[in-house]
Amino acid sequence: MNATTQQEIANLSDRAAEVRLNVMLGKPISEFTEIDKPKISIFGLGYVGAVSAACFCDLGHEVIGVDPDPKKVEHINKGESPIVENRLPELLGNANKLDLLTATQNAVAAVLETDITFVSVGTPSSPDGSCDTAYLQQASMQIGEAIKFKETYHLVMYRSTVPPKTTQDVMIPIIESVSGKKCGIDFGVAFNPEFLRESTAIDDFYAPPKTVIGASDDKAAKVAASLYEGNVEGEIIQTSIEAAEFVKYVDNTWHALKVVFGNEIGRVCKAMDVDSHEVMSIFCKDTKLNLSPYYLMPGFAYGGSCLPKDTRGINHLATSLGVNIPVIKNIMKSNETHIAHAKSMIEMMPGKRVGFLGITFKAGTDDLRESPAVELVKQLSDDDYKMKIFDPNFTPTPLHDTDHTQTKMNDVGTMLSTMSTKDGMSLLTDCDMLVITHNDESFKEIIKKAKGNMPVIDLVRMEKTLTSPEQISGICW
Ligand SMILES: NC(=O)c1ccc[n+]([C@@H]2O[C@H](COP(=O)([O-])OP(=O)(O)OC[C@H]3O[C@@H](n4cnc5c(N)ncnc54)[C@H](O)[C@@H]3O)[C@@H](O)[C@H]2O)c1
Image 1 (tube, rainbow, N blue to C red):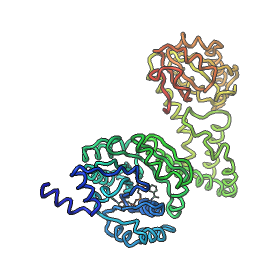
Image 2: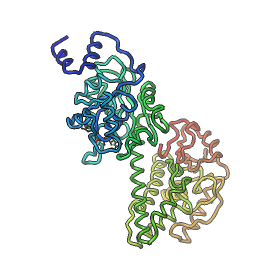
Image 3: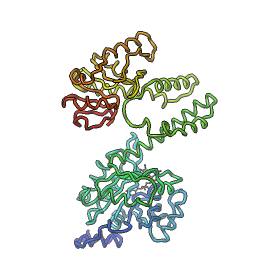
Image 4: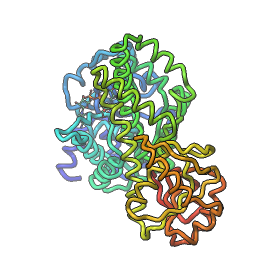
């Protein structure tokens, strides 16, 4: 053993030095999966880390907190809370009395002494709005340095909020290159987003809205889930690392959207002298269409006789009242962008003969009013595309356009009638591509028979297996 290595070992705490010595002497160390309560290290003792540390101690784990901030380390070592949070002082005090919780600035030692490492360091916004992963990169380097010396499996569970693919593209490569070991074999990685709300963080730890685990491999998934099974309420959802990463971004964006939507409605209500809380409490009672998964699955644009008309109506109302509602105002713009996106997918395909499977505003109705498929057909027709339409519910009717011009109304109705066919299979011979706008059972046989070189543009997420995966392009998947 050289002098540098001896000095490194001397700098480590007793357990870490013992582990490192055992590794160097080739002595086996027990696999932590056999241990009833794995020891946990937690990087970052801020709002997330301090709460997790207290709660995992409460569940009987030994925890070592790691933070470069000496004040946070000192607080934790005294059993005091570094932050203001309900019930946290009590839990940290208990953990301290039971000798379950310590904190250190020595990151490498903490990893060597434990079986699982949580990472909850900050991921602030960079000046350009991107996610700054500098603290995560530093923590991953420190974890890699420790894993280099571990012969036993170690699980790293990232909890900091990051954009999708960050774990795969940034953190795992750092740990692998610093440790010289392989993710999924020598160590595992899981992304386990945190859903706590400050002020109710302890309650949220035990009763989270959901527990989401995206893992590098089955073993990592199993070990990560075992920490929560039987200990916290709600479903444990196993998924890919990138879905676990993104769901947290999506959750927070949704929450922000809910806040501004409620406030925009509130401003219109106030200008009309309508009680905003009365309106929104009735709105919230509807868990079938309003607060529900309905309308939330990515697909094609909205249309029909109500949504376009009434979003236009509320915008007009707000403008006439002098109330600025930028989010609601941009709903229509977003819908138009989605139709334009579908058009650009069609334009990327070879040929100008397009077969539409579905033209009414949704499946199961003959209503053509403000159908996004009709809008798409109109725009393509202006660009000299030739369309053929199969929709079992299509009945030739004059169409009211949004500008209510009589000429346009009849033009569109006539145009659709000339494009429509009762023979769906003819689309396969007369068109260069298929565009699916409805999830209609009767379309499946046609799609299945599409030749291998015929592109299929799917706006509704039909079953992928109907064609070869290369042949079908989904609008949002
Ligand atoms: N605060 C919340 O309510 C909340 C909820 C869910 C998710 N998150 C996410 O969790 C992460 C942490 O949030 P927070 O509010 O707890 O942050 P925080 O700023 O309160 O705490 C982060 C801590 O990490 C420490 N740190 C920095 N580099 C470190 C390193 N290399 N090793 C160990 N510690 C290091 C810092 O000193 C700090 O104490 C963020 O990504 C955040 O977006 C926060």
